[in-house]
View 1: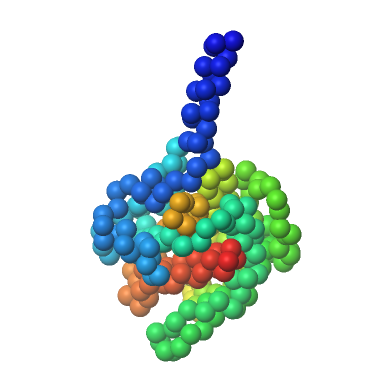
View 2: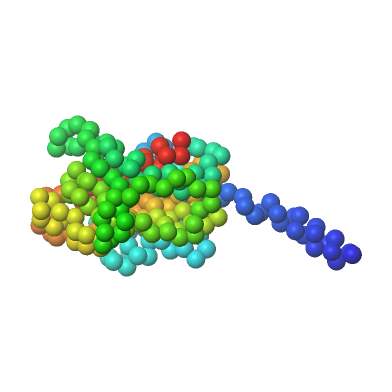
Length: 252
């Protein structure tokens, strides 16, 4: 009986440590004061390959979400980290927000060349597979998240026309990771700009004690000729901004 009481007492003492939300400093323990301040600002913390070595990868058991991008040795890499002051948001609510692909349609970005805000994606829809591009509707909301899922997406990009992506989603009890890869070339006026599987983006979302943490990293490889005329870091950042805004609006 004494042993049972002792075991129950130990369980009681350790229960608060389970299921508790982490803080930003737990997920990204190596940020300096300036970077932490930026993370909590409305613009967040943005880094690009122009600043040198990157890869802020969040600390989590068995997780190295930047490995795929670093292994590819992309010459153009952009990272973005922000904590949004939303409390009481369940992870399943974030998962359901990620499922509303059609809500990407019409989201605006500022075009420097046109000096106005224009839709980045003129259309957005799920499709059946990488072989069959027939549109399919977004699913209804769920109460229980699957452990893993692969979906296929077609976006009508303002710069690259119809672009096709494979999204692989992994969920755990405290976070969601979504990896996005183009399975067809991205073209500019019918000229391939980014070849098949040469663009990768990853989103990491976790409710933390300060709010909702969103970390995104994207990298790509383009020819030197294209790089002369297109600011690839800026192009990537605009797309990450739109993806993050899409998540935010979905969980509000």
